[in-house]
Length: 318
Image (cartoon, rainbow, N blue to C red; front, side):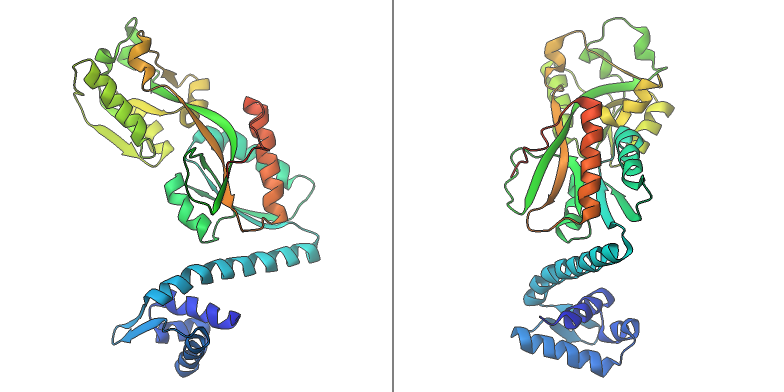
């Protein structure tokens, strides 16, 4: 395997031209061209289409790109693991986490603290986003594992999902919302106000519209969607919007009395919007996890169990 050639191949893709890539690699453009030609000859395919504007990947080039990124990622992990053994440290871990302030404020900080206890020298990098946002980076090897909604009907075979804890749907308003001055509430009371939800909750939004339609009603305002839990909370505090979100997103604010969870008087009206979501860890089936990743996973499991009881850590969904 031509590892230096693959490294240079990735540099050319990122730079978009041989000249720019050569400058970044501190080698001559002819030397880089010769290296790419040698890689193409070794693989038996053309990787680039060359024109006056630079280079573009062929279909073969795209296929090589996906694998080259994984190889590069695994090489970086191997070097990190070896360095960790030399330094008696644990290396580096890259994690994707969901947009839930409750998870960020409780579980992740506590798990990270326990990982760092005892003077462990470990680097931890967190990236926040929804499952859809984080999966490409997980598959490319940029992330070691992610915490996200578990898809019970997942059909892909390259990922393993491990349940951690259950989260539920919630109807949330600011603690000073006018609705709280009323008695028992129905869906008819809620249609008067605008709604805000997370972009990940399209099925939940469909359930809301179905519940409203079942009562012969329509929403008087639009629905605001965002990938940011912080934005959703800020909008709830600064407006009369009603939030339809996972409870973990507002867990801390609810406990502090800053927002209030609404319960509908008619159980049938809210049945479609009720339900539980399984949150869990997702990692690549064929990738070995570093010592730092395994240690952090163990700490996250422990924190989740303390929060909501055992979460079936030994029953991954494959």
